[in-house]
Image (cartoon, rainbow, N blue to C red; front, side):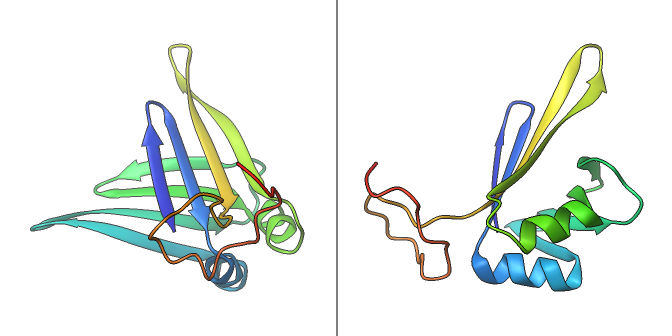
Length: 122
């Protein structure tokens, strides 16, 4: 699971096996270790919810996805889920969860578990 944070946006990309695991278990997490500290980021499905939201408590960012949206996303060719969450004073937090595609340019990263890229060129 890849995490990208920029300003008031969080973007998470999942490989095929991570999407399958999240579809079955309803929870997936990774962590970044900083010596004695760590940052945890997680996806969690949530029953009785209508929109994608997020929380930041302690050292953990959790993106909450309604169960019905999770099931539709996991079981179809749908590429992404997104939402803009009002966080007060006219500000929003943009949340984007995506299936990770194979890169078209050269990379040293293992992409064997990524989705085929629908584009043929950059």
